[in-house]
Image (cartoon, rainbow, N blue to C red; front, side, top):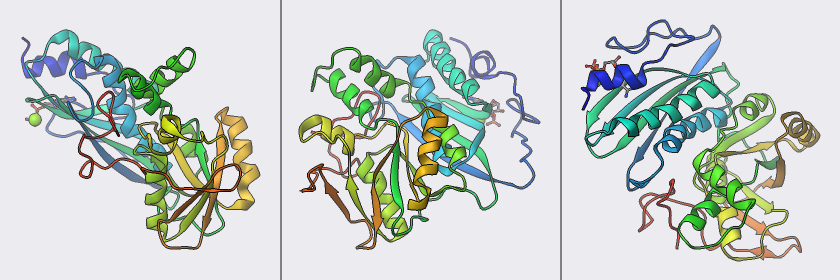
Length: 325
Ligand code: ADP
Ligand code: MG
């Protein structure tokens, strides 16, 4: 088995493109762009909670970084640098090679330099800290929604949760839906282009990691407002509806924008070739309250809102472990 230093040199040290001093010293040196503020975010992935031991390492490498990039998208930030702290049980080299392959494929796709980290023996755990940049005053925050704003969501939330339900035998998907759902689950595509384009348009934004209703709830609580939702094509009942509303793990963006900007948002959808769906509006009401209407206008009360590590008996959403039964 290679030493810690051989592992780092062989699998985690790659040429950087915008870093003064990367892996190898006691700290990395990075130079922020003049006039930009730094956006910093951390995510932890623990085996058994966020992924199972038989998870494909390449997909896991991609997802470990992608979930952090999604936080940058939700802030309207350009991701620039990342660190990776890894605990590994007696590492097999092929596993690490595949994990690093997926990780760097994602890093290269989004122009991110890996500038440091830490490596230790232990139950398999990955912690990424990501650093991005946004022009001062232009970050997309959760607390900026205003009464009357439209509520939008990108892509098709719920696919990742449906893919997981298939893997767990709770539903049977047929092609082509199956491939689409498994891609959403294993290879989320964080919406950086959308986040950047929403600077100056969105009043608030969040990425949908814990379920659409739960994440919208965070925006409402922080903005001190309520929402009325009319979700087009909302499945009437059952697993599909639960996945759409409470699925999570999609890493789509949910955002609010003044109603006067509806056509600007639609134009953005066309330009980015990304579906953006208006699902409701922000209203004055008890902070965090959500009223959900179906196509006929009747009010739906969802059984579950989303996921919470400390309230669920079964753990969290993840590549394979999520179970909301
Ligand atoms: P220190 O003793 O200062 O903690 P280490 O010996 O742990 O340094 O790490 C040596 C170098 O390798 C440092 O620059 C560190 O940032 C980097 N590094 C360690 N583990 C990783 C990793 N998993 N991914 C990327 N860089 C890493
Ligand atoms: Mg160290």
